[in-house]
Image (cartoon, rainbow, N blue to C red; front, side):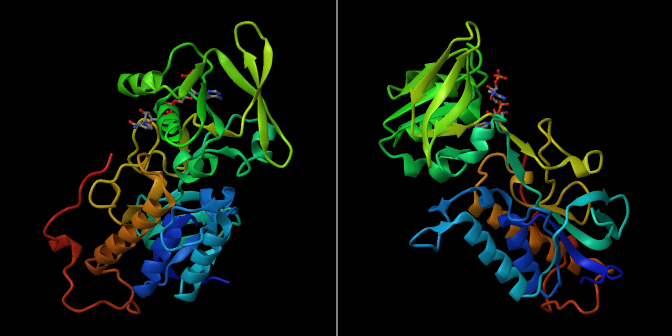
Length: 337
Ligand code: NAP
């Protein structure tokens, strides 16, 4: 049971790699962070199977196991958790106020937003059934498992071209299925994909169904102009139709780009003093568990340093003497878009 009356030093929104790493760093800095991890905690890794690209695991690790280990680690070093969704945030004054679905209002001196992004999906029931069993939304994460196999990439934007080009290095064949006859991707990415000998294109076509038993065996395709249905044997389906950052809660309060990704202004700090950003919520470039974790570390360190210069700092927090306050920090960090 958390003490809802206390003003927390740091409240972290999101229980994925960014939020949990921020929690580990903030807890070890004696800031006693509270993680509002959401009703379905753990982030995108809860939807994956084997993770082979998170350093430190020689034999790979299952995504949910990695998240459980991170959460246990955060708890062991002193982070507290609220397993509820945040439904409202008032960042207009300090302490900031976050309200959860269960009606708890939490007050915080600093907030780290690590609410992540969700891959857009096609909306087919079969797609959910095979997620992690032949359906993926991340070639960098899962492409390795499709070495010398035949895969489909769905989409016509830069993400789809990037996934197709990445997969072409290892798969036997890559077929891009796109619902129109022109690509949305940038010219340079189009050129690369269109010229690649291993990448084929199926135009004006949508994936109507993903077929298989324990794993994906085929896709059912619908020609959008003729309505004709065909089946194509396939080993994997990569859905690359874009991502949606989970930033709705902060619309009108935190600066965002046109696609809804948050924009940091100084290091990991948002346009609101005391509100920091970590992970996919502001990173649409790398989107890896390990980079999200790195951002979580950065945001926690930025928050800690910012709090040092904040007179509202709780007396129980411990500071290394001699550390400069952020206000006097020599160099502001780079601005990320
Ligand atoms: P995007 O540009 O929105 O493209 C999404 C693609 O998926 C479009 O081709 C769209 O078709 C298709 N699509 C959307 N919903 C669909 C559905 N339900 N069924 C089938 N197809 C569907 O998204 P993105 O490719 O993720 O790119 C997002 C942003 O990140 C862009 O600004 C992009 O330039 C940038 N980005 C850059 C790079 C890079 O430079 N290396 C890499 C990745 C992303 P329509 O074309 O018919 O709408």
